[in-house]
Image (tube, helix red, strand yellow):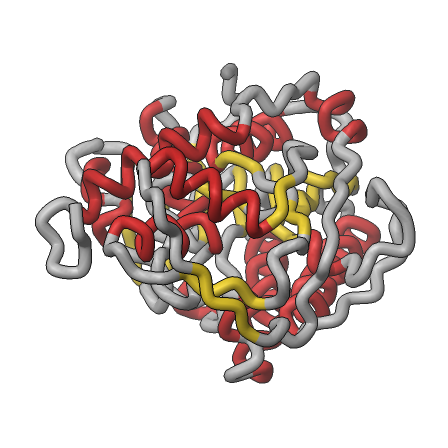
Length: 324
């Protein structure tokens, strides 16, 4: 890719998706600053980049305006990936709002103050709530059913206001069930990484609900490509895009496929109550982003899952929790 900017800042840069964006920017020669408070992010996600002279890793929280401002000198593009996790928003909804709402407001203020040329904002399909129709496109009503969906929608609205009032060049990407290497695999992680870890350990997996709930999984490298294309493609200002592969897989199908790749013949599955606010069905329309960016989501699900599981095997090798 031909990047028209020289310096980038990535919030949540030590996290799952953020670290992949940082990696791509650094290896493309862009001066890149990763900002993370390390509540969910991990130093190990960026350890392979520490010897690059164009990489800088800093500890910072998006809710602290003065702390963040120290790192904005010369920044031309911001990839705002920092977020409160959906899986913990029920435990502390006030903190969820502080990060996803006020934290986004802080980033927008700093971007405006320091004349940032492009602001790419990571949002979520949770802003839609239960589907009113299928497939869900960007014009679908926004009726979130979780604290996380509401706080992320607040962030989106702030992004739109800054674009409208101050002509800030912003774009919103709504993510759906991103998976890949480095995804958190603890109980607050993503379902792909959780199932993979438990099956590697020879432990039973828990499905909340009956397993028929449908998800739209997108490989992390395809999400990274979308972020970078949005930053350099004319005509994306003020736009909102579904950033999703369009792949449809049920949770039970996911469990079976991971077990198949790992050659686990007797998968032990426990079923528990539905998660409050959980969306039962995802069927995502991605025509808008594909047309705008000339983008194809090239990673088919089984291929991406195979790459993710191969990484997980290496990651857990020698760890006490793994049975590999």
